[in-house]
Length: 190
Image 1 (cartoon, rainbow, N blue to C red):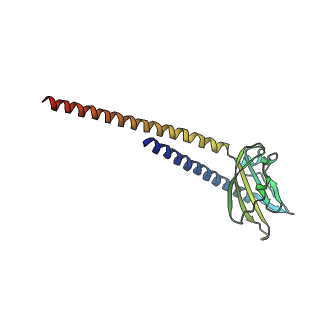
Image 2: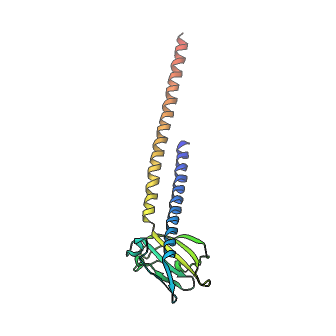
Image 3: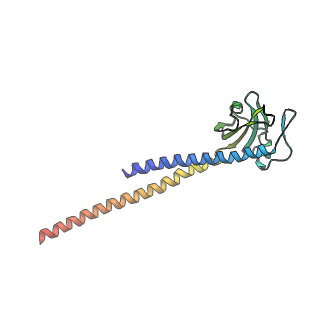
């Protein structure tokens, strides 16, 4: 019974840790979207940035962190320097409609079959007419390495504790039976 309980506990802990990692990724991506929004300029129907973005990975080719500006009706309008040669398995990810002021967290695959966390934020631009999506993608491999290490460590610790408790219970029970048998044998001899 104890091993069933420990197994279920391991599954619940794994799911909780996975959800925690993904929530953390979403929060970190939200900060990156705010950096893009703060630096973005719009003129002559184009987005541009007057200076390098504060997050250096946006300026480093193939860094694993990619920024995009898109419209659901047109698709991609701008991409960060880091995404210059980046390809999505499904470019329609950038055409998803995100309500103004809302965020949408999801996962997608690159053309190279690597998984990415995606956060899109719907924006109504300063003219009050045009809606855009600011999207940031980050390679999920680092996050998943944390996740894959967690169950192994926690289940090993839980398993060791469970085995120790079970062993203690078995020996305590066995010693109790031996002591009871010895006490019974003494009372028969008296």
